[in-house]
Image (cartoon, rainbow, N blue to C red; front, side, top):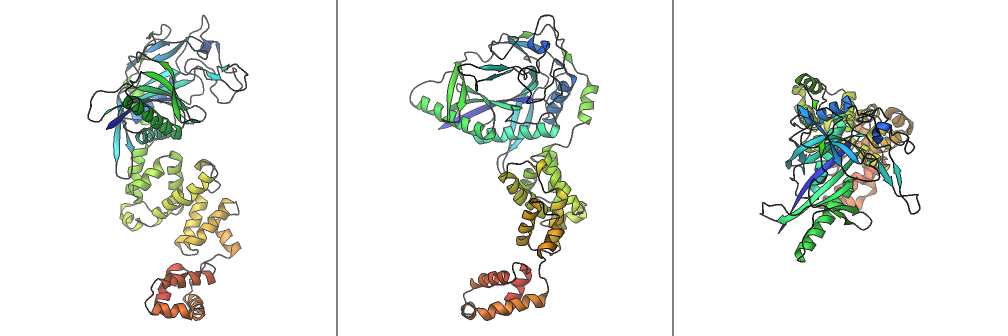
Length: 489
């Protein structure tokens, strides 16, 4: 009955060393109000000077999402009053942004890809920050953030569910990190999202009245906030009430959205060109130089992983969602000395590249998630993981024993070979030794043997388990299965 329409405005702090219009430091975590200069505060007689690196980063983003690059863009004053906006206006871009229309493809599941339009991305300065904790009955103002360069990325209203919105935000997060223009740390405010949500009857073309959820700073809260807002709007309309365009906040404790203020017009900030800043004119040579420095981006890397390593679209997508994870995987593959030639790709399918992918996405990811660490902080490096996988590959250890070895690697007990030697974990591959264990198991279980030979085939697994138990997990599983089948027939 109802259809949701979602458009997002994502604010990305650019990781320049200095602010967008001054030389002030942008390092996160400094003492409050120690990184705001006279220019950031807009004091009389000061003039802003545009940070060239911020322009470079904005263009990098535009090229990364196949967007139009504005050859001429203009900075404007966006007028509004708030305690943490010291000038009483924000320097931003309005009619002529630096990045125009583009697009980004999002993956919704293994088989579904959807294209989300990007309306524009413009440069602006960040505001300060209001602090409401530790001040009894008062708020504190920290102006360190004032003037930090922001890139505001505005999507088309192309998303139809909270799931799609989160996938889009994750795709933006991935690409800004690949491009090296921001760390995307949502907990520190390096990336924040405003969610514009409306609903309408399915089949209608006219948009419903939207409400804007401000400053959501985690993937989880984006999904929860949008779903809470959708439920609220449906309830309002089905109860005969109307939606008033407004700005709202999401309260995670109550899982509800709460109106801050009504907003009659989409743009009520009295924009006018900033008289202190000339129009920004970008020539073709500058754009070409930026383009030449672009890294391999997620979609291109995903396609390469599929063709070069024979990975599925899903595995390749997971491994390339992060630049760091993709690099770790390739380092692991390289350490195993896997050829990437087309002649060997077919032979590698389901082989070493898949083995590497399974361990990076499986055990390694699980251990990192358990302690909330990123891949860059993994105590097991790519070379160490490759050493472990090499011993699975040459059947020195079984996959089961490998998990114990990985745990020891994680604990810092040395490399895989040292751990295997120290703990005596080498796999038994000697046929006569395995046959001896099998004979002992068969002799010890005459009743199960009779039942198996009478047709109770499921008992085969029982015998496998007993052999592995008696061999302390060291017997080669494939040999155990083959030899047991012979002995029990």
